[in-house]
Length: 99
Image (cartoon, rainbow, N blue to C red; front, side, top):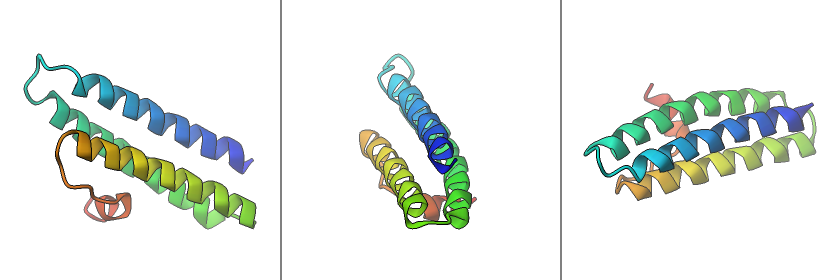
């Protein structure tokens, strides 16, 4: 069901965010945080595409709410990561359009 698909994508986003956090704390490599942000953005854009497919296939208000909540969570992760490295936050829809 939709809940399982949403939870799966949310889990992948959380895992990618965790990887970013770990790399961001590694001060031994000068560009580690920027490289980690690039990797996180790539994964979030990929997951954004999956979220958009789920949103398009939503068949009830409840399913729409699930996919909207997922997008909000992914945008929160995206914004936190950008702020952590001092970059301007760019919404996932705009990042996806640039690829």
